[in-house]
Length: 439
Length: 146
Image (cartoon, rainbow over all chains, first blue to last red):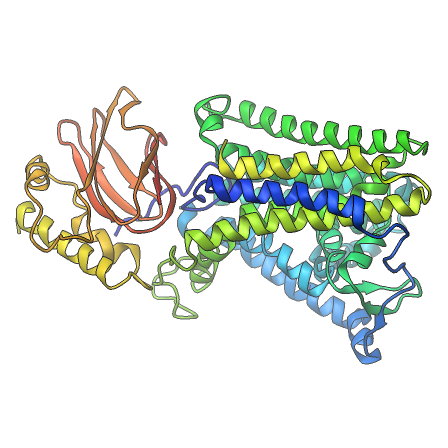
């Protein structure tokens, strides 16, 4: 049987997209989100209730020693570096067709989407296994001391926001995004820029400027694993964990890039976009659409946080970044809703192709090369319930976190001061459901 | 084996797949035998009365047709909804040599000017799937199953 030369749908890689959400389910979800928002505002706790950075139940000392051990980290980074090298080699030397080349599936599905469940379950995994940290360390003797280290704190998370924007643009816009050559070129280019920056700014650059590490670390704030202010690894409620997210400059930008790009991905799947503004399906319309969606969510968010701050007579400047961590659950809900089916269905491709990374005749390492992706592995109904469940759950957690944060910032302010931000969160959620419904 | 005998065989297989609940069946098994890039005679075979094997489980098939002229697609383009489990016959006539590919179901057919290609399959995988011309990269339609 002949293999398709292209495996492009309106976004990233994949052989299918989800059905539009049934109208009834979308309306129930929107109604639940609005109802919960007001219940939280009017009926929930009136004084801060969640724990702080000093809270949490310590993990066994042995586990902490292993997690913090430089040897374990270097070892994991070496494994990750070997896998990354294999993926780049497979991109350059493997089959030319996207549908038979390992690299696009590893990058866009298994790694990018898989980073979400991995970070939610196991904490900031990419920070631990980031292969670029190892490369940077190996090259350090050649470059000498990091001369720009003192400038790094002032940059905050802005470099990470830029790196993430560069990745989501690649993932969602250019037509050649799934070509193995393009994937290899982007990966190598990204590694060169990141390692170069780390040699100038020091290894802490990665925590601020590597988009994947920033993303993984941010998602890990919604896991049960945290680090107490004395450095001890602890188990604690994800709500408390999220509340302890440092409000660094640029945090809001990171969250808004994630939210806006997922919204743009949803937009590109609607009939309205495909037959209207995006019908040309070129770099120009895609770039404009992506920028417009990020700008739209940013404007709404800035307006909501600043208006809430004005009502409570708080300084307006820091408002967006003080509340940014409370929007992470909403961005996560969007992400799960959009990419859950991609990971469990088209994600199977990675495991099929890994059996023969270079497309060599006769090679079948795991006896899976002949398998076919089972697109019926999850039903359309289950996908729809996961989508609505994720968006509504993300909204509920987001509103709870924003409520707690507002009580800490302005303990005596009436609950109505929180209304502008809650309205913006409701707009994000209803808008997200609308995109899934396809308007 | 003529197209006339192959098509009902494909239908019977597709129906069997439907009746057995499809679990773990690869898309190819369900439809490969009916996915023939075929001479016009296949079209007439498809338009005849359905074989007896196709009973209550399979509703009357959906017929879709797209014509490609000078790179432009006309006919059943855009988002085309069909019911889950429906028998679909997609006929594509092109004025240029190309290859038709229906994603997800992973069906292909050679397109030759003057010889419409016909894909017949049971739409038993839910989701939205693009039918695309490989060489030109044109998306003909998005099949919305479910």
